[in-house]
Image 1 (cartoon, rainbow, N blue to C red):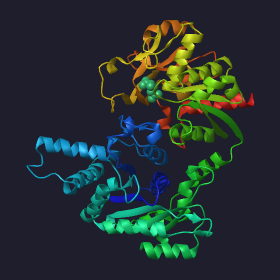
Image 2 (cartoon, protein in one colour; image 1 turned 45 degrees about the horizontal axis):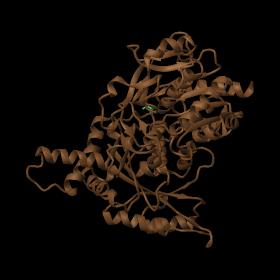
Image 3 (cartoon, rainbow, N blue to C red; image 1 turned 180 degrees about the vertical axis):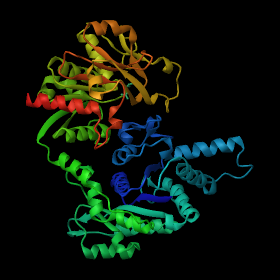
Image 4 (cartoon, rainbow, N blue to C red; image 1 turned 90 degrees about the vertical axis):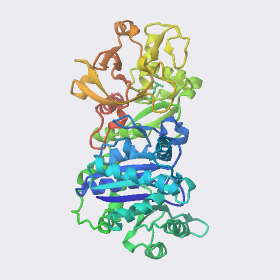
Length: 534
Ligand code: GLN
């Protein structure tokens, strides 16, 4: 087993996750079985309790783990199917150490960061190596080298390389080479210093990936190699990708990243065949058509809040020779300006997941506008609840219908708390999470798009469609086209009389891959294209 650890230096937001995922792509194309994972030094047990403002999207795995959005990159860039083992936080580490201490497992010893916390961290890597089938495990360490909270992780990795043999471990440091405009120069000092910090700890990276806005010339590469004590071929330039993040593996391959990593691990691997990946990138960059989709949400200014949705739209667009331009609309702006003003020129409306009351009335206006004007509508999780509320109010004339999440006293609670949620008080990992089966109704649009009777989709919600309104809604033209196998939970609703009005209680965006767009995103994109051309 080989181990690759990816650290970050100088500043955050360098695209460490993208670099790690891209390396995963390249090694997988060279025939290795790759598992990617992330260690996050913060004290939350998982990001499930964090606001998107803090953290961006919470990515949900099959087993229901609520994880860092980088795991989304990992699953999209490789064929790995990840589990809760693949996102370790300091919160989990300390929770486990303290539980063991209370149980008396440490036999009277003083419990300390070294060795008890570091053992816990190493233990997780060994557990992944045992339980998951892989030739190589790529672990990204969150945060920036020099952060106090990251130290136990780096110390654990220093010990780990001694245990498994340095020849089986490669450290890769992703760093920033800033351009100083006044001097007209790229600067290597921050990188030198952050690599020096790692070496102080006893970690010597074999590769440095240099994020930079300008190409690195030979002199600069030589200087970085010398001061950072890496071979010259280990200095990898990583410029901003111009068009799509899916170019990153191609660029890093041109720079020789996978070759140098393979060599440093003593692996003799065939060259990767990237033809299909290139073809995908080409379809993303040069589509024949372009459509506009309005994503109406609450965290719209944040690039990362709906990451998987944007990626899924890219995948579906590529499959349909169609660029999908996202118009990000703050739901509260719709409340102020009206739906027509903001949605007039779009080919589709997508309402993503969300929590809390703010902006919901704007989303309801957006859903109504899409329904009444035959604009394709796709609702995800909260987006299905919004569609249901809108239909109840404006088609079934159930005045003030709402979700009890937003109005506990509504006369028509068309969205109510899931039965199993009624006695739950703790917020962490307590929603209906992970993969559940959905049965599809014969003849429905959902059934047609999936091309099968039953599907597995990932969930993250506390509220559900209230079954006592089912008859009223169905009689008025809302079809419940997907349910849990026992028929009790509505998973998909659609309006057959509309060109495309479909909303799901789950999160299809967590299962779309570049070469395998999700069928529902595919259908939505086709409908947008038809709207655009029609
Ligand atoms: N807030 C809603 C619920 O808990 C929707 C959740 C979501 O969109 N992920 O059911």
